[in-house]
Amino acid sequence: MTTNPIIQVENVYKFFGQLTALNDVSLNITSGEKVVILGPSGSGKSTLLRSINRLEKIDKGHIIVDGQDITAPECNINTVRQELGMVFQSFNLFPHKTVLGNLIMAPMRLKKMSKEEAESIALDLLKKVGISDKAHVYPAKLSGGQQQRVAIARALAMNPKIMLFDEPTSALDPEMIGEVLDVMTSLAKEGMTMVCVTHEMGFAREVADRLVFMDHGEIIEQGTPEEFFTNPKHPRLKQFLEQIL
Ligand code: ADP
Ligand code: MG
Image 1 (cartoon, rainbow, N blue to C red):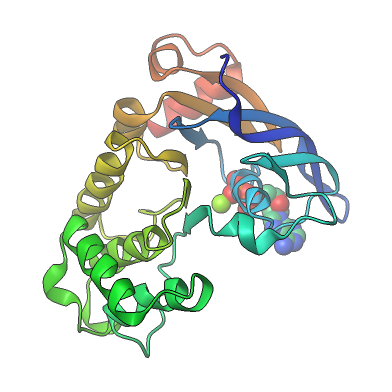
Image 2 (cartoon, rainbow, N blue to C red):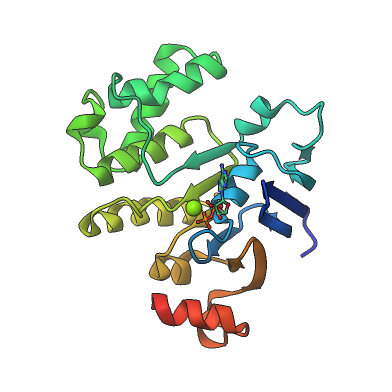
């Protein structure tokens, strides 16, 4: 590809004691691209995502996000984090704040937005994720699927350039998975750059431009959904797909 990547992961290593969680990982993601990361449990998927916004500090290599080397000591990570929305398996909403309260907090605090402006953006986002009627409700009153949609809206409230999703539907009851994937799919169609760890193969097939398979801290195969599902090359990927499909 000729365009500059918005995320550059270059020869990254991460160690936890004796364990090599990321083993010479390199990955370039272009603006607007949707990448789905697959791999067995413990393969380093979360560590890779968390390294991209420096929730994990890597031991070797470089990670450049929108031109900023986040591994450089002079990097202001808080500025970079404003460009990166992250959604986790657990929804992590603030329980003592309403849905609207959850959405306006970061824009008011970090972007010095007025309450009125933050609320107006928040209400638009709640409409977008299909829960306008829950603006004044506390998270505990919502289903898991609704909470996760609020978590997505909350991340979007900072107007990020990139969204990172770490198994966003894994903690949900099966009947709620679809509503969250629908929100992610519409976000993808709007052109958001997305990096998603998920085991939802339907989503991967439909939405991903590229699939990345990790095992034991390494990227061992990459390709389009078509290539992955019809012609997986590495035996470990074949085995993984047989188990999951
Ligand atoms: P995945 O998301 O693919 O399941 P992770 O990135 O969470 O994998 O973990 C990769 C490896 O690193 C695993 O062996 C895991 O046990 C280990 N690991 C992750 N976080 C830590 C940590 N904070 N301390 C020690 N080991 C960790
Ligand atoms: Mg994980």
